[in-house]
Image (cartoon, rainbow, N blue to C red; front, side, top):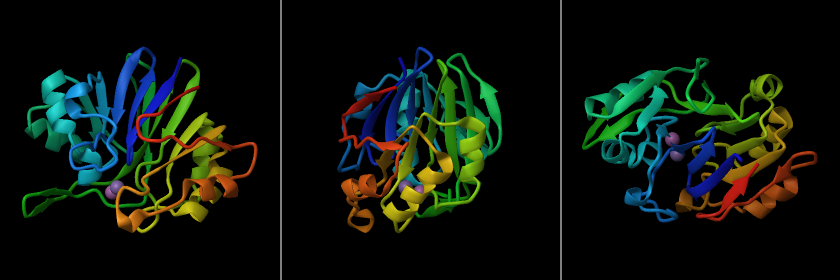
Length: 227
Ligand code: NI
Ligand code: MN
């Protein structure tokens, strides 16, 4: 059975194809975090882009567990330099892992990595699609709405779409609701809201704007959804 556990903000622990895949594990310093980094034992860690609220605890968890970091090339290389095992990819590319097929999708955003006072170029940001067990999960990463979400919907037919709704840095509620018309997922799960004042949003309002056949599932940090 495929499942996702919401760990707060844009962090999810995905169980698909018999493996545990962490996405964007920002836990230390995340007021909504539902787990401590030391509690997690992923096989893989996917990082959609280099911002600290996504890269988060990736390197620490990877070094402790030996998990492979899957990320766009520049972010993967940054993790490699820190000693992590990596699998670099890039937007549009797919690879068959031991759990299933994972591909990176476009995202309209930034990806630079802030280290101390230095901003390290992080290449292009991404979203991610995981196909395993006959199920498809889409994590949009941080992004504004874009028309090719329709293409993602047509090509990959996501069962579950994890969509940012907090606005300011990403889509807001209205844009994310429209995005579900393009992606046509069976289920949309809102993320990237209420972690900070700048991204306050009401997920119930999002749920009201989304039209059938897409159903909205609101997860509290720590909650899981099986599909
Ligand atoms: Ni970001
Ligand atoms: Mn973010």
